[in-house]
Image (cartoon, rainbow, N blue to C red; front, side, top):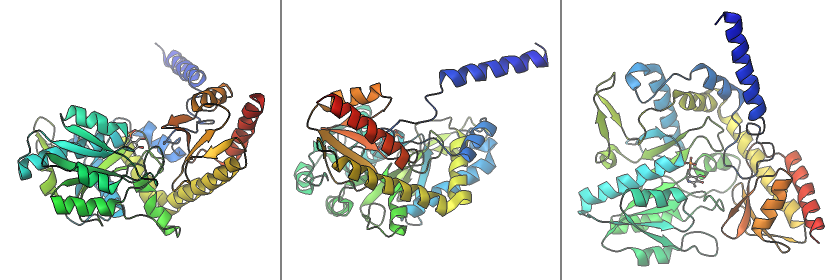
Length: 391
Ligand code: PLP
């Protein structure tokens, strides 16, 4: 094929894909996602550095340095002690699996538990259901109190001699609520249990909310019983997909799960992740967002999403047939409609192009960076049309 023909074919493929996928890249009417389109600089990084594979670190030593700096930054956000260790993962699900894996093996080594049980809040992400299944752990799901936090008394009652660990959530998928991590930490210390915190969503919001003057829960390693924390970079930070991490209090905790990989270019490579081959692009983009664009970029994103969350809550409260399911503490809103089921409402709104999700008994909206006030105005307008049509 001549250069010109090749160029033509290239352009045709890209043009066709642009047409085919045009609605899938903009997030124009997406109100259900915990991800946002990445900023221009991250997209550029995705294009240029697509060949970098952090699964083979010996080949990419400079990217490994960036990875270590990203991990150190995240550990710092979580108030990790200097003994911390961790890994960049493909996101919250993998990090939660690794956290549960560490809990199981740590408990086997330290407490001799062979066939253990792990305790989850009912608000925990489905990744924990997968983790328990994969790790052959029995799971016990604890109900929430009126504030949608895990009921601490019920956790206490559930703990028995086979319990390997407890999970707390800092920014639950359905409500944005943070469990009482401090109380869970006290319990973990008292009973010598592993405590993993899923801060996939909240972990990159709370530190910046605090800087903006809000009261935020203590959800990280400032609670001495916390052994590991999940924190994602492809959520509010807006970095490339896939991007998450797990940070551990110390290497002592990871020694039962870390694996040596001898066949790679650096034969001393060790992995804490489930995945082997991992994209460098996500790490490079995160590094740029954290280090180059820095605090003002993140503060702006967090501030905006909070202002829009407040605005949306207010607009929803003004509609008679709509009831708010809880006062949002993060950028997640739940509501119900007196006139139709959540399923019908979501279906009707989808006909107008809006993507919402249902969580538990409510319709759920996540206010990410692409959900601006203008988007909310258009959405409320369509919501009112749907409700008036149904009268
Ligand atoms: N943990 C929480 C609290 C989440 O909300 C999510 C996803 O929404 C996950 C974990 C899973 O993250 P991922 O989709 O990155 O695997």
